[in-house]
Length: 280
Ligand SMILES: NC(=O)c1ccc[n+]([C@@H]2O[C@H](COP(=O)([O-])OP(=O)(O)OC[C@H]3O[C@@H](n4cnc5c(N)ncnc54)[C@H](OP(=O)(O)O)[C@@H]3O)[C@@H](O)[C@H]2O)c1
Image (tube, rainbow, N blue to C red; front, side, top):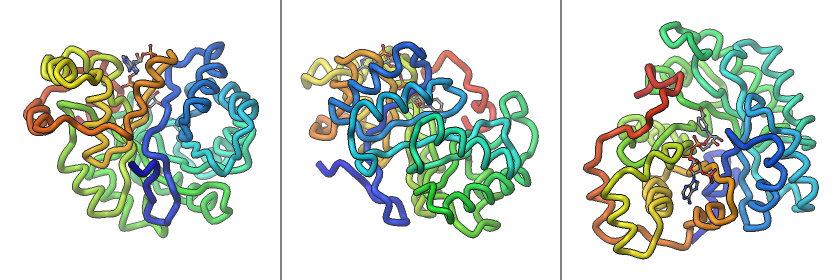
């Protein structure tokens, strides 16, 4: 299976990415390096994960050509003005020891804890900064994360460059069909964060049953399931076995199981992401 998809500006993005949230500082370099050795070419991060320098060290040590890598980062939720956005983006590049990012996203439509407020005007400011960075060719693609239809409608008509990406928490039982259809209609590619619902996906009996019958792991089914919906997963893993297991591009979804999993409508997360109130 093809390893990449193309964003609407022609930019190539690897279909599976490594998520780095919750990777401890001291383990990040080794895990990212292992992932790169195994063939991962998309690393997803954010300044608030506090491990950019270690990711940068891993990239440098790997000696992989920068052009063969795809690095996504995100502007923190509380940054909602032009100057700070430019500053944070440049600091991220410095920390990662790279001179461009492949994708830069607005992490969230509102700062954490301000879910009832409207930051659409401020998001346009942040967006203007992303457009500047895109024009300067220090960012290959620009996008958003956790933006619902309402948030996108307050952005799309007013911007010069439309988002290439929306990164959303999508997993079995929580597929956000109307939002996915809206993104597809607007040529916005979806990166899927938390495809394993941070480990909670394994409690779904149907997933276990499918895995047992078809010699795949539950994680593989869960990742394959979102890929088949054109959601490009960002998976966090911190063991070599998990890293290996999650590379499912050469596997297919066992016949008939997509329909079965489509019947599940249950958000298995027990943690409440700060954006949940707006986007669930
Ligand atoms: N934009 C946003 O607001 C946002 C929000 C959340 C996450 N993200 C991004 O998306 C990435 C992934 O999401 P996530 O970290 O929330 O959760 P996730 O990728 O759904 O799940 C990670 C958990 O699954 C486990 N795991 C991974 N592979 C496994 C396998 N093959 N078998 C069994 N367990 C496995 C990991 O354990 P081990 O560590 O032990 O391998 C970890 O506990 C994050 O790291 C971050 O980069 C973005």
